[in-house]
Image (tube, rainbow over all chains, first blue to last red):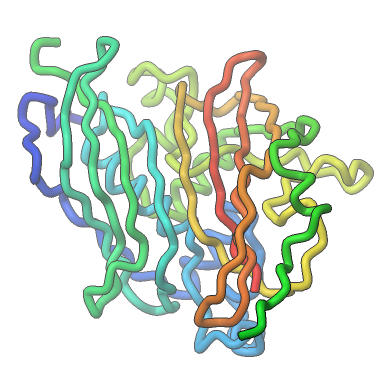
Length: 144
Length: 158
């Protein structure tokens, strides 16, 4: 795997390539198993509706992990995701796309590392930001 | 105007800042692969240990968001990592309010970590869904003495 992005290439305001995941019930069940979160509102429609929700909802932590994947795929193989903090402001329903986006807000060197800060979020198909957050990643330098 | 009584009790407040005893979590190869697959990764680093080692990891790295699984044992009920508050509340419904993970080192398959949990904030709010209790907990993950990750989770009960 080739390094695509280096620290020198990055500018404030630059967008990270968007990642879109269609979150069908199979995806939510895979996530439940992988994460160990078996709360029924994510895969049992009757249960979800009995708690007052209109439908099964996408796990918040899955949206966090999808944003993590977007960042990993941007900085890999040599960069690292150092911090990812998000808030679950809006619910995403099963069988809809979760669209992950990010914009660079700051870049600097600190303690020998090349740090990039970003604003990240997920959107639903209506363009509403349901999961706003911030992230910190490191990137390699072209100077080695 | 009547002032609604607070659902936050002194008992709840007494938990703020108190650290729970350590719980053991294991990070293993299958779990890393399963997590990566659930999130849709195609990067071989999460599936192929040789590739992970070529890229400088000790073994398959834990994908962002994965901090291992609790060593589950029905005979040891204290070995569970509860995201729910450690105290009783009048609410039955739960939503995840937020996740903040900070990594201080790579976490890889083969790692055995200990986790301690601390409630750091309790608030109540009148939301669209009625009264809500918002509890923020901080989980500290250590490999030996070294802190490798900090997880801050917000849980909403209503």
